[in-house]
Image (tube, rainbow, N blue to C red):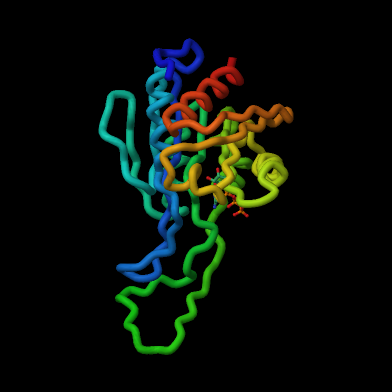
Length: 223
Ligand code: CTP
């Protein structure tokens, strides 16, 4: 893994999101997902190695403290949206590696739900799509925005559609149907697609190396 400050990244402020949001059902239960936060944490570390100052907005486990890293812990999609908006002031790049819940319970029970009934129905409503909301948000106007696409089929086609729909500069595509890479795994293998249609594959490697390659691609785009 090559390290050391990159002339383009050095001194820039980056916002990275990580982990899977948790949408509460009651005081002890939530709807979550399998994201481990490893990819987002690796991206934050890679950007810091290149000289960036990183705000890591995370719904997962926070990495150890280090110079250049500010951690903002969040739980829900709504909290992540608010924290990202705050963090974007003065930032140049946003990398949305978090697995944000698409649905949340409409009502959150004030007290722990008791068992007893044969069935339990929880009504879900959509959460905010953070990237879509930022598309029309002044706070993100001059920000280079990188999304992730977690897909299990039609991986490249679905990712391209997301890049367009969310108005992204780059999208990092992850085939999460494979157990050896992606959610929870130590390795990853991704394809990075640019708004201009360019496509680069980063071969399977530890997430730290994949993160380093992604940060290098972002630096190339910013130059
Ligand atoms: N994302 C977001 N807000 C959401 C859901 C996702 O900002 N409510 C971001 C993710 O952080 C990621 C990108 O959008 O960078 C794509 O996320 P993904 O889960 O792959 O796609 P969805 O937009 O949720 O669409 P679908 O679940 O239909 O594939």
